[in-house]
Amino acid sequence: MLLNVRLESGYGYENGQVTATETVLRNLQIDKGKITKILDTKAAYAKTMDCYDAKGMLLLPSFRDMHIHLDKTFYGGPWRAVRPTKNGIFDRIIEEQTLLPQLLPTAQARAEKLIALILGYGSTYVRSHCNIDPTVGLKNLENLKLALASYSDKISHEIVAFPQHGLLRSNVEGIMRDAMQLGVTHVGGLDPTLVDVDMEKSLQTMVQIAVDYKAGIDIHLHEGGETGIKAIRRLADLTEEAGLQGKVTVSHAFSLASLPAGADVEMADRLASLGISIASSVPIGKSVMPIPLLQKQKVNVLLGNDSITDHWSPFGIGDTLQKSHLAAQLYGWSSEYNLSRALSLATGGITPLDESGKQVWPKVGDAATAVLVAASCSAETVARLPKREAVLHKGTLSSGTLEAVKPKR
Image (tube, rainbow, N blue to C red; front, top):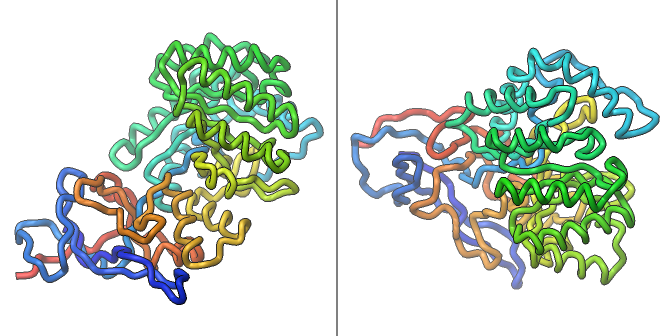
């Protein structure tokens, strides 16, 4: 029994505007990882149950980090800032050829520490990209799988086989196929025009691997402007031709920020019709990603931390909720209603209240996968980023603490 849990129950209104979020206290019974009863705090329950007191903390759906690189990070080791480059991604590829073998002996340990970090911030689902390249072959994947196995009861995961040095450029189709046989869930790709210098062949190869192994796709597309737009449009066509609707993600997709009015809606509608998701780290820069438009047109937008203190960036902290907070700041979502809806970016679309304010989560039968925070509502949680006091994954305490108490007699 999880006692004295605060649940959102509806919106409060003034002059037709949402100005507050209403909550109630409830006791939750959890059996075999699922919520089986939601009871009034005065209702009777079996005295043989193990009981934990939530002390009025707010229960929210846990978070999903849908773009991160667990396999290569400096986290858990000595501090190191990014080394300057002259040729961008190509210098980074050269850097990796020396760096990755140096990181291999501690790769599993650092991945495990990174998993513990993101769990502490409330993420119980992770999609990790993993280097598949001539330098380390399948070794990063092997270490990542060991790290995830050690947390198998605390976090769910997907793995993207990521040809960081270029799918064609580094000639890794064979190794990528070997990775798929090891249980990888998604085929990755990288800048098919800039890096692979052959957009059509690069995309065709990636899609064919996905089809052959009945896998999803998640491509890194940093290319801006017209080359990026061409790649997205062609990938959309290939998605439709291959029957991969609902299984494709474009990560970063910076080129979407360059689309003029009209063309942006047309593109968003095309992505939505094919179930193509956009994964973003909510970048701050000259171009602002059109996340509000994508959401309005029903494109599935995913959030991820991407780099966590590695040779690409020193800034990632591992908190997916903080990405929702950043989006709220960036897009001016400062009202009670907009802040509460921003939570959906971090949770994979799950919110306690639907758009009309009806309570839709949690329900009996839902997985007991949630986070407890000392906050009054979702809006405050997104705005103030309170500590994640306890994190549950299918009824298992993944991070934080809960106070055990004796059942009331």
